[in-house]
Length: 83
Image (cartoon, rainbow, N blue to C red):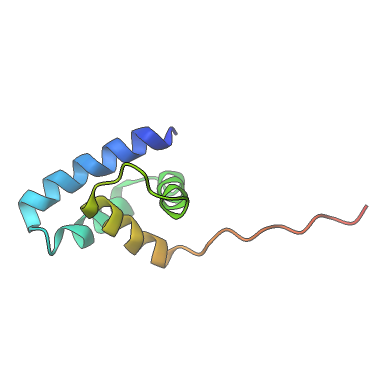
């Protein structure tokens, strides 16, 4: 999935939760939404995007993805197999 599309989606979800839960509680609500309803591949992609610099994420989305990143281990480099 295109990372920019994921950014747009998480920003829209964040706008909803900002109004619904308030700015203080919105990041946790967004992170919970992403855990419940996003495919694991989508979550991995948005976390990888966040770790690479998070350009375009609104403040609430950035905080929510940071919560997900804390729960997601960084991908480990696979050592090359011996020839």
